[in-house]
Amino acid sequence: MSGKGLLLVISGPAGSGKGTVIKSLMEKSDAFAYSVSATTRAPRPGEVNGVNYHYITREDFEDRIKNGGMLEHTSYCGNYYGTPKKEAEEVLESGRNLILEIEVEGAENVKKLYPEAVLIMLLPPSFAVQEARLRGRGTEPEEKILERLSRTKEEIPRVVNYDYIVYNYDGGAEYTAEDIISIVRAEKLRQSRNDQAAKKYFE
Ligand code: 5GP
Image (cartoon, rainbow, N blue to C red; front, top):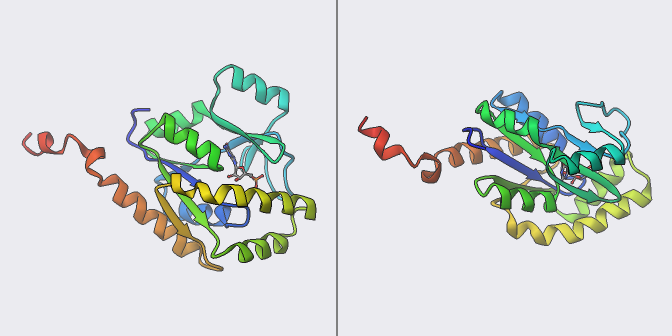
């Protein structure tokens, strides 16, 4: 991937408000593109095929893995989730910043493949707030909520593999999106991303 777009990985436990923050981010700037993942899980009420996810069968998903069509993939709470490779590459080549909203294992795999990727962990203010948000959302049965909370306990210690931690306070999605824009601005100015600066200066 040689394009100039930034590969931005945003992870966060269920209830961290990833969806709202990313929506705000995309509204603030058209320099971002969202990678629509493929999944084998069923759509939640209100979710739209091709917008939130590409909802596909296990068979189709396994075929795509075999054919090298996934940039990364994982199994999460009994379902497959993965990033379609072709779409991701096209966005990066176009110079836009690509947002991958993926869980920790996928994020770690992306960082191995693309060390220049920027990994951001979005956190609710606390585990207690996360739990309250998940129950308040009312989109999942208790059993699924408990499964996601238990997964959170495994995921949070892996925050050490991330470049940034951003907190998403209640009602603060816009501020959180601004934090992410600041990160992107600074990352673009990194010396390592501008390693021809001296040469260009004298051209
Ligand atoms: P949900 O079912 O709540 O939409 O997503 C469950 C988890 O899967 C979330 O942590 C989400 O970030 C993650 N996820 C969504 N798409 C992908 C993907 O393409 N790859 C990976 N590794 N994780 C994903």
